[in-house]
Amino acid sequence: MNRKLLLTILCLLPTLLPAQESKKVSIGGTLSVDFGRHYDRFEFTPTISKKILPKLYIGAGPSLSYYSQTAYIYQYNKETNTSVELKAKSNMRYLGGTLYTRFYPRETAENFTQNVFLQTRYEYLRGKGTYRNSDVKFNHTTNNNTFFTGLGYKHALGKKSKIYFLLSFKLNEEKYSPYKNPIIQIGFDF
Image (cartoon, rainbow, N blue to C red; front, side):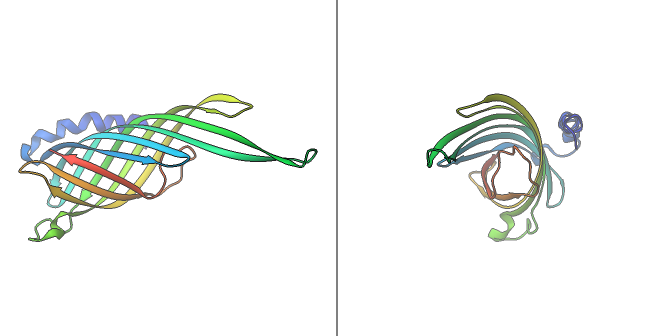
């Protein structure tokens, strides 16, 4: 799926929404943050979703992500019989969009299992960033098409708002992907 098709779907999604009851439309989004010794990532994705069939929801939204990684490379010098530590740093800013389906297998149950859901998601991200070490510095761009699957749980915070937790895994490997498995996200729906 290319970015033109994704942008077309994102633009057409709101035209599908008034066809059914407005109470089945949710506005929300996810926030995902990873901090580590050599790796930092921040992602924010506001979304709009709609119940299209019993137990089945679709959603879409723009995605904004920032990724930073620091690597240490040790280079051995045969002449001096020593190792030299080289530091390399990469920063990427991503902008794109996401489409997802969410399925609640036991949505009509009368216990906590009604809040468990399965989710599949496609995300397109275009990244721009810099790479630098002690010898070189260059700018680069990348296009990532990533597929995810996961398991989540939603919890009501009130009459109309919910918080949900999602554990997902990317299914394909992209060279400059900002994601490392597993991906843990916290989201809200209103």
